Length: 309
Ligand code: ADP
Image 1 (spheres, rainbow, N blue to C red):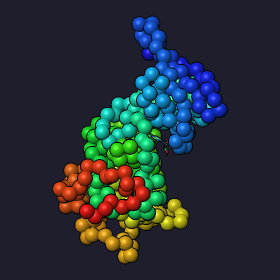
Image 2 (image 1 turned 90 degrees about the vertical axis):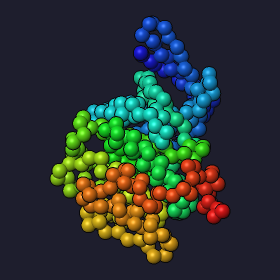
Image 3 (image 1 turned 120 degrees about the horizontal axis):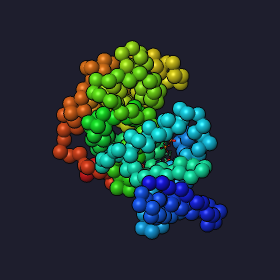
């Protein structure tokens, strides 16, 4: 199947994007999208609301300028992101609808997450209650279990890559650093990740790394949601890396936290990847083993903590 696009200006801000899909039997179909509100900007992409005109469904349309993909590494990274993301289907992973291109851009059509990411949530709320952390971590673990079962390591689990839908459901996104292992015992050697969330074995670089790097980032994520900033954060990267290698972090005394919550984080942030808990062990920690954890949080928690009732 083959596709190309035409862009027609409707007014100053909205643009009509027409995708022509040529099927293998020679038939052509077109899909028209109205490019609307700007949603955000990433390393290479600008993301807008894309309304599919026939069914009026609103998606997130990621536009990547081909001019930014001149370096072969950037192009390879995008192709790998598309190939991996396309193959995934899970309740807690941003749904990849499809992609197409024209002479200037590559377009990726994704499930729309209207409530931004956990970065904006933490910015507004400063930190979350333990109940919210439990609710969100369970959803992230569910996505990770699916990924790891399909031999995919995300390698960039962090607040900004965890989106919230209109129903306040967590959707993991951005597979730009993800990798798919050829076989289970394979070790990866590329140094990647986001400084604050990077696992110690990636910094050591000795025996390579595997699935356990996502588990480490999950521990960093849990701490960050509870405290409002990452455990190893400092003003310079070198010091942050030293702190990660030394596993040096503390729970600030002025933030009230249950012993169970602290024990949860401590049980995950284990320097030796082999000794780190599995995702099932994490789900069996008493912090997450409670009947009272809701499946979803109400939208009011975008602005204020959930009520105690
Ligand atoms: P990059 O891969 O280039 O870093 P991102 O995937 O991080 O780009 O997207 C950049 C920004 O676009 C995000 O921070 C977010 O604001 C917005 N965005 C991305 N995907 C979606 C989506 N599915 N729904 C809503 N907004 C999105």
